[in-house]
Image (tube, rainbow over all chains, first blue to last red; front, side, top):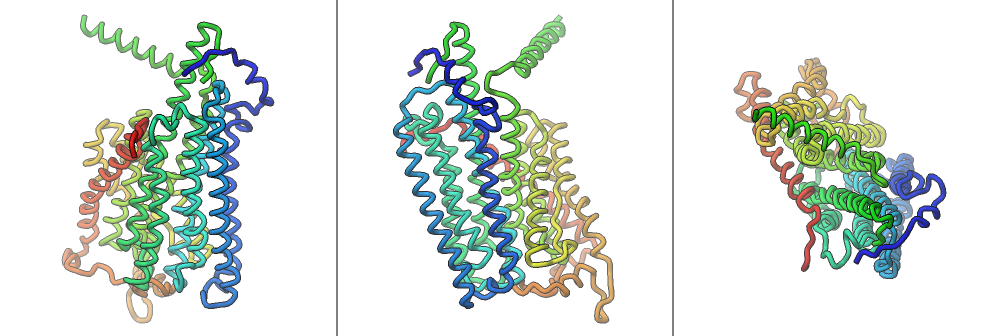
Length: 271
Length: 261
């Protein structure tokens, strides 16, 4: 599968400090992705600061319908459209490029972007599993829980939970088509992604059981009730994210070995 | 003679490892380390925080719930889980006895942000009522046990006990001022009880938490010691739950693929 060709010209196409492993090059997504999600969470949180205790406290208010429920519908529609667009792009573009040979430089840049996607996923899952749950506990234990679409639930369950699926599946699609030597279809389906995607999907499914449980068993908010525990158990599946870092660093070491081997003959291998 | 051979082999091994550490790569540099450690900090902290929140959160949200019966049992059990997983990962990958401390610091940051932004500045409780637990001292001691024993079995037995005990000591320093007696409406209560009455929580079960119910009261003030020791026992189980996560969910999947699914 490995072809041999001279490929030093690929290095000259990048601007200074925009190379495959530069902060403003391949690693850019490591900052941009997480900051985007932190900004989205911050905007929602700041917006709620001014109205949660007025219009957010009573789900029967017309103002609640016009703001919080509107935000719920907007989030669901936006998340669905963004997800379908991104996944479609990844599959269509991926099928075009998956068999095109690339230089080591390009592959390393892709691995850096892949790590940027992992960083983004890590931060997104953090906002989903630590930032909003604290608001969830704070609001429901001390204020009111008169609907499944409370101010705390809307950004957590209906934006950051589904976007967790978007990111984990999208990262797999990127790996499958942009890093075929690691995650190519012929290798099978990686257990690492199976666990990570399972975590995001089962968390979303657990929302249904959570709301059903709250409607059936108790009216008080006790955080340690057993029907909350699946959120934790499913969350542990996200440990598969560590395997993603390991699998791609192993490929990086492979690339270095190939460069070293090719260096002896004065040629660079092209995947 | 055998000793000289062993010394020579050890020296050669040292030189080989030294050369490997200082090897120059074209694309591998310290930026990858930075990206990994900082990115992982988020999901590690979040995993530890949500595990604690949903297994023991109620006993940690409020000073009046930080009792002597359940808090010393549930909290170290829930905290040790992710710390144990990270201990396994970092020890396996780098021989770093730092996993528990790393988890503790990551969780401390996220937990504090959560308490401050949501409990303190969204539903407006004073931070001296809703401060969160710390596992940093406990994590340091548990990592120290791993470093000295180089054994997960011994760390699970000794380290979990040390973790649980250190957790209690380090957090008792913070809860102790709130356990001072005070007179309130002709009754003697603790300051934390008065906080629980003064700051109303309309969706929690009790305005005044009934603590130390059951026969544990017959231990004449020794309730907390019984709970601490039982907490140590339970924490051993939590440690192995964490080992399962580290071994089977984080490390085992590396390079493994499903051919048919």
